[in-house]
Length: 586
Image 1: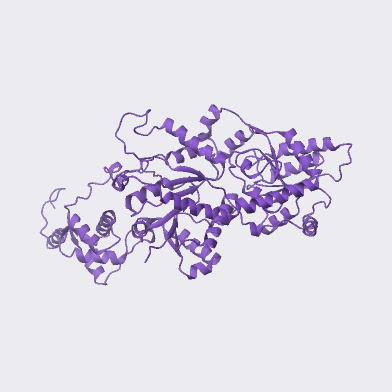
Image 2 (image 1 turned 180 degrees about the vertical axis):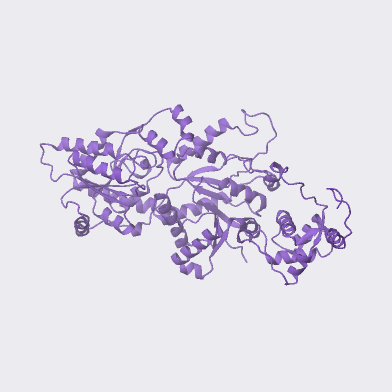
């Protein structure tokens, strides 16, 4: 019987809360993967029992058919060692490359029977702490089966630059910039591959004329206007600065002045807003009024209202200027709705918009070097430094105005570009297409050779603190393998079913009542810690040396085991025969 094909992750992929692009992308990927259903089971190792249970409920409601067939397993991170020993995973995929790929690789190398591929995807890359997080990727235990999936050419370049710069500042052993040291021939970093995000194309459709009229009437948008839509985070520090956009519309009005150009354009902004963002929203409305621009603002629309806003629009406008952006999922959704796009020639947008065919790209200009801001960034809030950097990124306002004019004045061009955009999304960015590329990537990574398993197993990650060594001075003594222990009176009551110890819920992956009872039965006669751990491992399939030591120390802590001789000492003390102690006469 063939081994089951198992897929694993450390992440929920389904998250509640504000509807941000990252959450939509992750949920869409999981939906598409489960729709294709290429694996025999899907294992989720979540951060806590609460997260585990919430994910089980959410995914059970979302895909009851797969849940009924037992295709999901929901566990906690403490279950990972046992899970990696017992199961041969086809691949693990993480919803963000920042958090856990290197840590998971170390645990895989240490305990797994197979060096399965680990992939993780980029989202925002510009936070000041991410240099530290990418440094974690650079260690001798990374293998050719580990990959960061960058969603655009710009994201590939950014990740490669992270690795190159960190390699200069923190050279690995054996590199020309490092002191001579023996080093194994191990890859030392994940590979970087480009795979885009995707959309569920079938859930989007171009609006009919009737639908457009209905949606405009419902939303209070002028029927005859050419409607330009910005759907993004409504924040000057998070996505794009709208004020230069207003200047472009001001230029557009001057260009059209004195010409018979039809109804004036209308700018619609919609999307996520920060808490307390009302003052910024009022400022935008006042600015638009001051330049005579028809303007509508829709903060935090739900998904149904978002679809109505898209249906009411003629052009999707996204002159992004912020380094947080790496891809542009909203652009794909707009193209799937048949809207032409006017966007900045920036980051991943140039991968999505085919200039002149599906939309227009507006040139941008940025700084070459920012050493003071680079040094200042880790000391400041990210939104402050993102704002400072975005204010140095110039979206060419005159060119933007010309792009607006070209799309405002020619409905035939808008229709042609919108249709071409829809076809491009169907051909390249549908989620079934994206998932098929992931499956091909995992197959390709599994074929990559890996270094010697023993070498990997004995290559610790330099950022993993050896707690026993670092904190060896905290306890009075460290447990010795020749320490002789035996079951206490309380321990005897436990294995006889006369007493019931309390095991905290978070520890259920490290110790369970059945293993504890086995331990206490084994220790009825005095044994050394080494002997007791060996016997426990022999009768418990998922027990390793470290977990066995944990069980022994836990039982000692809770007085279910005791040092050999303790019982006799207590009897002597009870009979009044205690002699001098270390602290003087009794």
